[in-house]
Length: 584
Image (cartoon, rainbow, N blue to C red):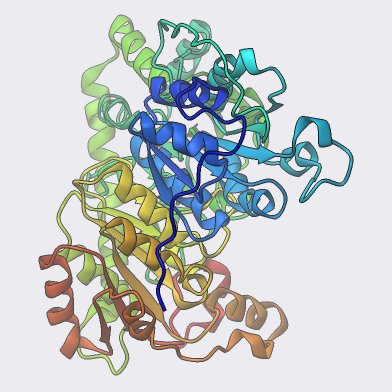
């Protein structure tokens, strides 16, 4: 028997028409340009207040996936994002996504419900030491205790998250404070774009700019290595001008993928620990190994991006531009250019105009380097060709990715999970139009964040096609978010690399121990049946005979869909350390 439940009257003491702390915080979010908040109805008073201002709640199924959505939304939009959660266990699930955002310098505001102010340290339900919990993955933390300062601290949290080196900020909201009546505060008139990042653009000392230019102008074999900071600063156009006017070839890290046009004569490609057989940048070592000036642009000089700090010659001179002064000296003794990346590059261009550099000499250098790089690029293409050929007995990921690129609209955003999914994307998609179009969780590189990140990117860029490339191991972390996508109408083209293997783990174990643990093998799952549970269109691809038809249909039809691609279990990306395992 079905019964209709009458709506309950507001609880005693709660006035739905009053202006409350929740309304003040919602106003601060709205004033900062926030129009979506990722949540699961907590803190409830805040979510209701936000809805009244037109801020849409995106109901994730798990907090860790919600944090990944918020992360990618910020990356794809240049706008801080907001996620809400309950105290205790829900808050602990925010940590993985916040840790990724912290390492990748992505701003995010976590609004976490907390216990009643009078119940602190009494073992209230799900009470926890949240300051300790978030201390390793946030740039700012505050517990709101004064209702009259709600707007102030919400605004401060946004400023903290978007200024300097961006990252997650946490504002704890005791349950009792949100419904307190307060006077409406006057909105601030800011001279900077509140909610956007970088909030303020600062630049290096002019003397350091001149010194960097002098090094680059005199170099015989200069090299720029662009990282994720190029995207965060929207420095793509300035970087292209530096490349062209200074005649410096440009490589990128995995997170820097998309910083430059990879078909340009001075493009080196994605470099680091993935320069083995089939890598488009494999033979670029011949140039990199003799580079005399290396310019790190918004680059963490991490293990993967430097091939365990062995890729660049020790005798090279290093320049490092970054918003964080510590990063400029972390791994290489460098000439520091501390400031916003775009501002730094634009200042270099201005000083270049003033110096009246020898244009003819730079043009000769550009021609010389382009002539040197061209055969290296062709040789890599020849090495890769057999893996792209149709008709293989089992579907190769290299071929699958290239076919996805051929069918997807030119301005598509591609999102990959961590581990091998990232490497298939960064190695075998070719960037022709620079921009933040290639997203992956490589700040901390946790598995399972690829698909929810794609949902966040689509919400940020609703008019762009978004493609998610995930492995079956990573997708198992977040199947539930298919329901989120269908419920909210978030159109993402999801491709699952189905090989029933934990690929990176398997190859790492074989490489180091010459045997592998049995959990590297998994059951072969029919993901189309998972999709069917939420009425998501889905198809299985087993080889070339199905690939063309399914991809054509997936990109022609609107709405979410899933492609379950049965790929070769033995295939792995061109990870240099795994080269001895390559047998086909």
